[in-house]
Amino acid sequence: MSEDADRLDASRDQLNKDKQTLSDNQRDSNQAAQATQKPLRTVNLTSAIENPPRAEQQLPADLVAPKPQVNTLGQTIGKFVNVTA
Image 1: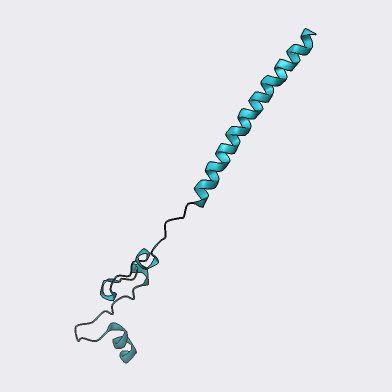
Image 2: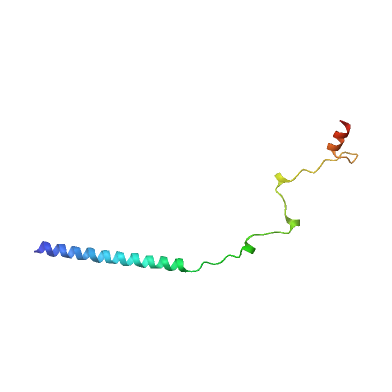
């Protein structure tokens, strides 16, 4: 008879632990659901992209064409080579 009483007590203890775990899980689930239901902050896309004036825009150095070299006569070197060749 005492074995049955011990098993009944153990079952009740386990039931109380399971109820507590279920309650905790339901509370966490409700909190997560409420967090996802809050509206997200809207983003203003017009101010998200910065567009500086054209005068301030610059290409990276590797994309900029080199300036032509000028000889003492004021001719560009490429033109001088083409004329004399």
